Structures are given as C-alpha cells and as structure tokens.
Amino acid sequence: MFRQLKTYIGRQAHNLVRYLWEQFWFFCIGWVPTLAGIGMRGIFYRLIMKMHGWVAIEKNVRIRFASGLHLENGVYLDENTYLHACPAGIHIGERSIIMHGAVLHVYNFRGLPDAGIWIGKDSLVGEYSVIRGQGGVHIGDRVYTSPFTQIIAVNHVFDDPNKSFVDQGITAEGIVIDDDVWIGSGAIVLDGVTIGKGSVIAAGAVVTKDIPPHSVAAGVPAKVIRSIDGTDLTGSKHVYFHNSGG
Image (cartoon, rainbow, N blue to C red; front, side, top):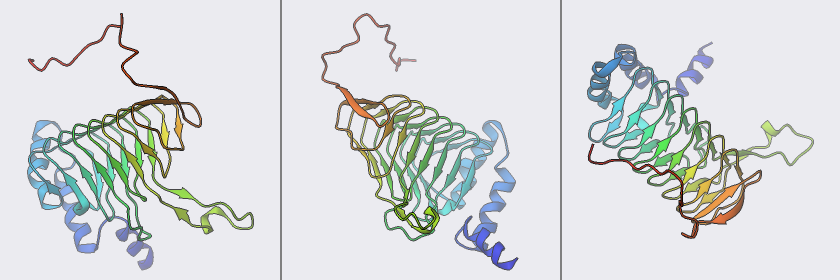
C-alpha cells in the first residue's frame, strides 16, 4: 500500500510536501466560480506556478505538477481543462486560450530528454483537444486547433511479434507546428511531424509526414491537396473580420 501511495504522489507532484501545498490551494479556491474565483486564482496560484502578468483560470481546472506550469500574460484556461506538466513543463504564451475539456499532458516518467509542451502567443487549443508532449511539442504563434484534435508526440514500438507492444518501448521524436497554422476538427498529428508556417490541416486528417509551409493537407494519411499562393481568393464568400474598434 505504501508503494502504491508513493507511486500516486509521484504522478501528481515532485514530492509529498509539494503535493500537499498544491492540493491545499486547489481545495481552497479551485472550485470558486465567477470573476471572484478567477481573481483569487490569479493572485494565489502564483504561489504554486509561474505566472507573468494576469492570467484567467476558470473553476475546476485540473493541474498536476503545477511548479512546471508557465503562463504568460493574458492566458485563459477554460473550465474542465487538464494540464499535467511533469516534469519539463508546459509553457503557454501571451493571450493564448485553452478551451473547455482540453488535455495538455507531458507525462514524462521515463526521463525523455525533449519532453514538454510549448505554445506561442495568440494561439487556441480547441474543446476536448489532446496534446501529449513526451517527445516535445512546439506550437508557434496564432495556431488554432479545432475541437477534438490530437497532437501526439509519442509512439509505441511493435516490431517484435513475440512481445507485447508494452514491453517494446516507445519512440518520442517530437512535433513542431509553425506559426499561423489551422488544424481542423478531429485531425490527428502524429509523432515526428513538422507542419510548416501558414498551413491548413483539414478536418479528420491524419498527419504522418511533414507538411510544407502554406499548404492545405487532407486525408488519411494526410497529403497536400493544394498550395496557398494567393490565386484562390475569397471571391463572393461572406467573410467577417474582427472589429478592433469594439
């Protein structure tokens, strides 16, 4: 029983003291709703994680290894998101948004050298999306993932027919998603992939190989179906823009 308890604590925080300290603050204010709760967490969560500027954290956000969480000014964490920063950390840039139900999980208990999740400025992780960062996930600025996307920087080895895949180890090459990429709903990005700047990944695509900049990729496995070169403009489509004037 002691061994099981030690394993559990080791999956939640760096040590028992740190676990109790973090859980104390989650218990006291993690559930508080409305602006009151956001304000309290914006002040007191600084005692357990790294914040630069003001950060909005809604109620019922689950955080583990909080000391490895780095949040820049203007970050927003929606309700029921789950961030597990063990141990290399999760870094979220200015004004980026993590939407309801999203999971950001480093989960590096094998000592993988490049593990971690880095998200740039003004990016958005859509509802119920999953990012696994064992091999390292580097996401640039203004990257949007639609709901239910998966970015998985880890893979199981299954080459030996005489062994279970759980006994053959894993690979963790990492994923790079450059600036200004849009990933459609339900798309999956697998380990070892780089998606170039300004590209679009269609809904439901499975990306297994690199995608060059300014490309549209679709299908299973994903293939480039056209380049974004300015020749296919909006035409008669009804296009709406953000009104910065309010």
